[in-house]
Length: 419
Image (tube, rainbow, N blue to C red; front, side):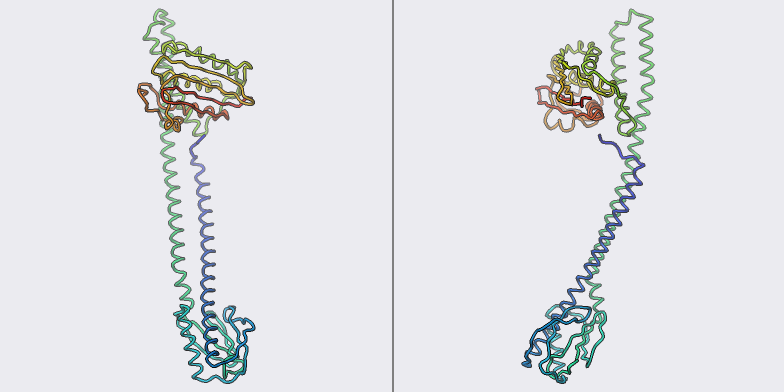
């Protein structure tokens, strides 16, 4: 059964929302961190490839025999190619210029347009963020321990430029989701307050209506006792009948309202379903006679018992019979059957009424819904009867289904666990 979310649960929803947003923020930060490391790794790989290609071309142009034997750490703990020496000598200015031109060409080839500085060290060079050091042992006329040092002044700015769209989009997405979530939560709170105010209004109105209806019923009872000759008068019967109908409708509204707020508990007692249905039919006999209705009753031979609320189960049967009477364009013929099936009891109510289309069957159990077929608007009611029936049956851990075709009547099956 669907119930409205209590306002007392809103703090829990708010807490859950905050935890979810914090989790999303942590995930975004982790994702940004991994993206930053990946961009840095890609940049380093491009630089190392450019350096390796430049050294390879330089040595090839000077016909230096090279054997690629190992990988050597080069700046920021990245791997670059190490070329072992053939015959180390001192490097000339022209060779250094040629090497720098090769580096510039390959830097551009690998899409690196950041400014950098090139230095050649006799022994070692210091590495830091944005700098790379590689051995020049294999370069012609280079000293044995010479190192090539390349430093990028704008590498961090480059990384920041690459990360800026991702950071901006992550912040934007987070703000949009957070704003939307809090707007939805606030709307839920406002809607809940409006709904609860409406429920309180209907409850108060229903209670206010019950008092005069009770007084009317009491007055009619005393009047017929004092003047017994008017007890059979048609006007008195109409007053009693309409008073009873209105009282039943108000009771259903109050029941559904209490169900939605979770304030109602069923009165549990052992009920003989055969006796319950028989009593309901007897109490509705005058109404059946008025509609010239015929009822065929098939009771279960084993007299099944269920545990439930006698009052509301009686109203369920009464409501189904009442609908069979109202939504019929000829003399009503109603078949009621009770049968036991393993651990459950099936109560079927079949009529010869106008029927229900397949499209309408999907929402006939919703509140305030009525079928718009033929002249059914002449049948009075609030459109809560079948919603009431479904609610009561589900509270008894049961199910309800309908089989119907237009102009072929309807059959409602109530399936209740057998205790």
